[in-house]
Amino acid sequence: MSLQIRHVIDLAVTGLSVLATLLVLAPLVAILVYLLYKGFSSLNLAFFTQPPHPVGEEGGGMANAIVGSGIVLAVASVIGIPIGIGAGVYLSEYGRGTVFANIVRFTADVLNGVPSIVMGIAAYSLIVVRQHHFSALAGGLALAFMMVPTVTRTTEEMLATVPGAVREAALGLGIPRWRTTLSVVLRTASPGIITGCMLAFARVAGETAPLLFTAFGNQFWSMKLSEPIAALPLQIYIYAVSPYDEWHRLAWAGALVLIALIMFSATLVRVFTSRGDMKGHS
Image (cartoon, rainbow, N blue to C red; front, side, top):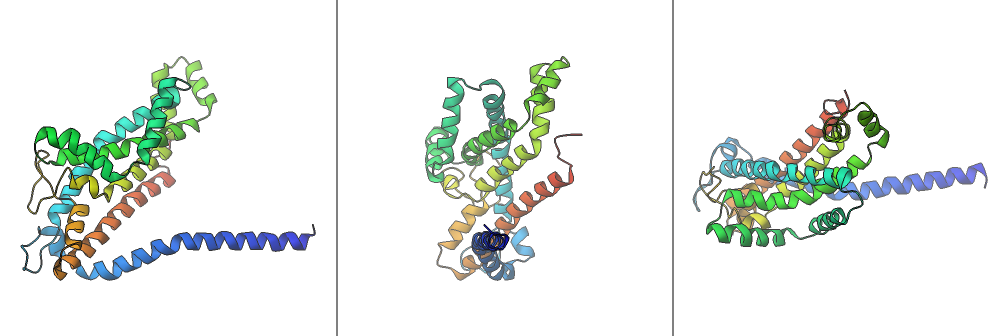
């Protein structure tokens, strides 16, 4: 094959790759542009400082939903991330090749594909029915159930990329295996693990179905874990299906804020990781 033909093929493949990339980015850009167009004009100070106003009154905001989302996501992260990382460490470092590890890995893969509404129904049956009331804690647990399999599999894959020579060097120095895992292996793989945690966080941050069955929503200020609580995805859903134009306007603003918060948190972690602030080595 001549050099000219190879050059043409290289240009064609490069062009197709660029085209495929543009096709992937186009829907995302279109959604972001439309969200900015519809939601930015509805943002004001009241949106971030006031709870919803009664039906028929203009104004109001989603301050209670923003705080509620933060509480529910904090509960989900505190529960789901440590369990997921612990399970990933077991699969990679201690249970490799065992039957129980294969069962855990298969279960995590299955749970990753379970629809969120099924998770919500399961959380409703296991938590809400037993408590006899909706609560922020139930909502956080439902989202934690969804975070665990993603964090587990990501942690396992990231730990598998750590060379075996690193483990052997630490063990050769007389460091206990548990300390090697915590101080050497986890530290080396920490950028990838953190990225996986952020992916799990971003996945559950916009979920509505699990919260419909657990947190239920609240039109007033509530920050107690034992009571129903507002959340941005819930508030957006309620406003979007309503017949009121004012609520539709606030729903677009809420959607823009939710997307911005998710993108900001993911970007922040990526920036810190790339700068070395979260690198797995000193």
